[in-house]
Amino acid sequence: MNSQIYVNWGGNQVSLRWHPYKNINQSEIVTSVHSYCFSQCKVLLVQVKERGFNIPGGHIEFNETPDEALHREVYEEGYVTGKIKYIGAIEVNHKDNPNFEQNGPYPLIGYQLFYRMDVEECFPFLRENETTSRIWVEPEEVPYVMNDHELSLLILKEALKIGNT
Image (tube, rainbow, N blue to C red; front, side, top):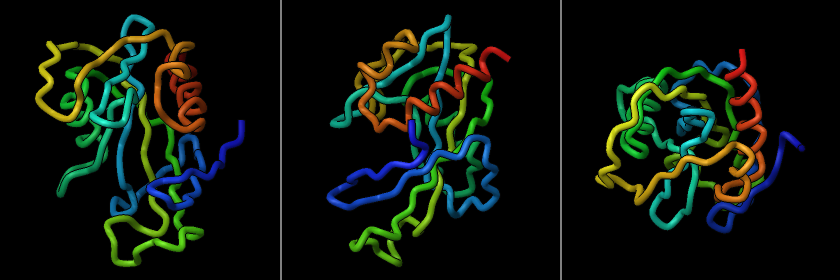
């Protein structure tokens, strides 16, 4: 599987490239954080309104570190907590996007950070935020349930590898 793909986001072509374990030290170029959450060898997927099933994640708020944002997002969307391990970043490159807004909300080249969480506590699912349901699936079932691009499967493989170390 290729570590670089092109996706159509909102009618715009955007380049995505997976970088396992790449350290991103500039918080202003990190646009979001996401996690594969594991419990009893199953993966948590949440149904986000109008987007289908995916792993929990979202944007970093002002004065929040990526790790803090991840813990908050995973709790808000999946109602779980646990220990996290960083596994890499997707570079989101808009240089081939003719509609890119130079002073818009995203940098020309930004990064989405990805983690593995080993769930320690699972709380009642309250549907207080943007998710409408959560499910736990076997890792091999993820491609048939999750609504995302193929890089997500490379990231899942990495998350599974570090779970066995």
